[in-house]
Each structure stands twice: as structure tokens, then as C-alpha cells.
Amino acid sequence: MKFTAEQIAQALNGKVEGDKMAEVSTLAKIEEGGKGALCFLSNPKYTHYLYSTKASVVIVNNGFVAEKKYSTTLIRVRNAYAAFAAVLELYQKSRPSPQGISSMAVIAESAKLGKNVFIDAFVVIGENVVVGDNTQIFSNAAISNNVSLGTDCIINSGVKVYEDCIIGAHCTIHSGAIVGADGFGFAPQDSKDYKKIPQIGNVILEDRVEIGANTTIDRATMGSTIIRKGVKIDNLIQIAHNVEIGENTVIAAQTGISGSTKIGKNCMIGGQVGIVGHLVIADGVMIAAQSGVGKSITEENSIVEGSPAFGIRNYQRSYVHFRRLDSLVKRVNELERNSKSK
Image (cartoon, rainbow, N blue to C red):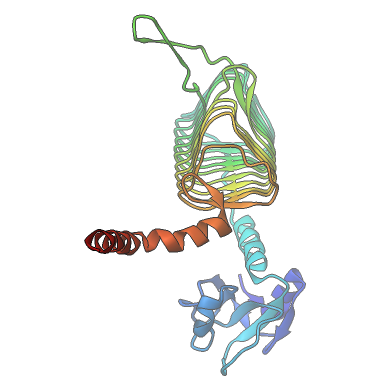
């Protein structure tokens, strides 16, 4: 399908600067865009590509000021990144959705399937499962007994959802993710071995949650591990039993969150962050990548970094001294030798 710059601008509430009839039929990165491509520019590091791109149309921020001549048509919007995300969403929705229920799926008689669901080959759906309207479940996924899946969910290949878990509407779970495995609960015994503590709770994902590939979310020992609405969780993340994550928090890859920690809403957690158990993280907190959080963060909207993590400004000031530590030690040793020789 082809769209003109004017049609795209109307959909995005933007303004065309250049040829309103410029046509696009594909999407591309600005450094790779050719004739007929629609691109976007929001990161200043990529500005130089605007002056050489062959793309037909580029979405930019309203405040963008060109420093050189360019040949492409611009669409100015309030937020170029968000606008391009909206275009990608429209493009994805325009693609045909898979339909039907495979004869090679195994579905319990007591399961209740909504309208327009897609069940791929080799999917297993257990007893008393509820699958909401328009939900898609792809090959080799396993949905255990008493699970509830909301409407318009996408459960990708190889996902495992353990018994009694609840998945809200418009959730996406990527391949290899496991929701509801046992929490890491073992009681030390006098004989120095460990006795497993039964994990009888569940996991609740509220609406519009996205779970990355090979991420694991453990069921609660009792009660629920809860991921609130709008949370976005990257690949390869471990969320332990009884954790609660607040609305619209985002977490980058390889982060680990220990049991019973409560994370507020609108937080941003970088990659490879480690958070110990039974902590409270306030709303709006930002945790820099590779930080280790060993105590609660009670100040809302604070930014922390380091291991152990502390305020980012103090960390950055301290880091200047960390880097000079070797030369400072040499100076101290030299001063000591000089004082002894006198």
C-alpha cells in the first residue's frame, strides 16, 4: 500500500514541509532509507543522515532546524519517536492476522475459547483455561490449568504459563518466557540440606503488559506476584516470588529482582541491575545500568547509580576520584617516604 506525505501527516496530526504528494510504501531507518521509504529523526546523533538520505519522507520534531540542504519531504510533529511508533503500530495492524484453531493443538474440553482466537499447532491448553477474544497463541506454547488470558493477547512460541495465573487484556509475552514457575523457596534443615517450601500463589499480569523473551516471573509463595498495567519488561529478566511492579515501569535486560520487593510506578530500571529482596522502590525512580540496590529508595523521582547504588550526582563526583585512585595512592606513598627521610 502507498500513502502520501499529506495522508501520513493527517494521521499523525503533523505538518508537511515539502512535497505533500510524496509517496511512501515502506518503512526504514534513516541511514538506510531509499525512494519510497518513510523514516524518522529524533536522536541528534543521526541528524547528518538527513542531508544524504534518499528516503521520500522523514518525520522530525517540530523544533528541528536544518543546518544544510536536504532533498526529502519532512513531516513535523510534536514527538517524532512517538509518531513513528504510531506508524509502526498502524503498519502492524494492517498485516493479516492468523486465523483458526489447529487440529494439532491439544485443548481440554473444559477450556473456554473466545471469539476469533488463533491457536497454533502443538499448543497445549489445560483444564478450565479461559482465552479471551482475539487472542493469539503460537506453536509449542503451554497454558496450564485454571489460567485466564484476556482479550487481544499475543502468546508467542514456547511460552509457558503455569496453573492459576491471570493475564490481562492486550498483553504480549515473547518466546521462551515462563510465567508462574515456583519461587525460590527452600528452608534450611538441621541436617544441612534444604526442604522445598510449596509455592501456592500465582502471577497476575494486568492489562497492556509486555514480557520479553526468556524472562521468568515466579509465582508467589502465597498471594500473588503482581505486574501492574502498562509495565514493559525486556528479555532475560528474573522476577522473584511476591514481587510487585507498579504501573508503567520499564525494566531493561538481564535485571534481577529478589523476592517480595515492591517497585513503584513510572520507574525506569537499566540493564543488569540487581535488587535485593524485601525492599521498597518509590515511584518514578531511575536506576542506572549495572547498579546494585541493597536498600530501599524512598525518595520519589530520584536517580541512583553504582554498586551499592546511591544518588547519581554523588556517584559521578565520586567516580572522578575513583579513576584517580591509583595516582592518589602513589602521591600518598611518596609523601610518606619523604616525611620518613627527613
